[in-house]
Image 1 (cartoon, one colour):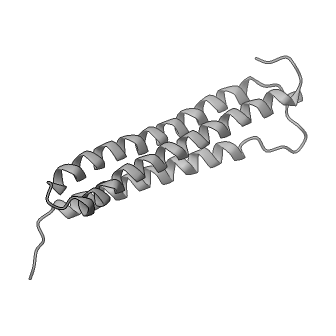
Image 2 (tube, rainbow, N blue to C red):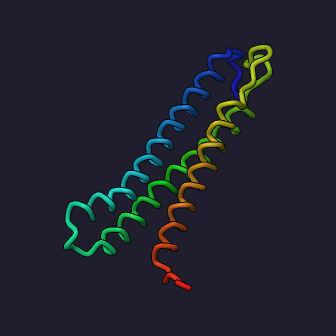
Length: 132
């Protein structure tokens, strides 16, 4: 529990949360880039096995996306722990300290939806098509 009675403690925790948010976004974007890079490899070298490149790129990309989601969720949890340790004197009057946490939760949700969409798209590409 903090006994500094200084709002700078809250603001430092919030800056840390937003730094984790940037890291989460970077991991999610990097995962998406890796997953989509299989298309570029397929265009650059069509004679190679595209299914092999797509398989590796899909799982590696999904791994980075899910790592970003986990980082966003974990940073929310840690920030909530810090908020609970602060006293009322460390919160400026009328200041909503939960906006940053809401932003991180939104990034985690959208990252999870992106991972699900990429996985579903890959599953549908592999499924045999029914022509009727």
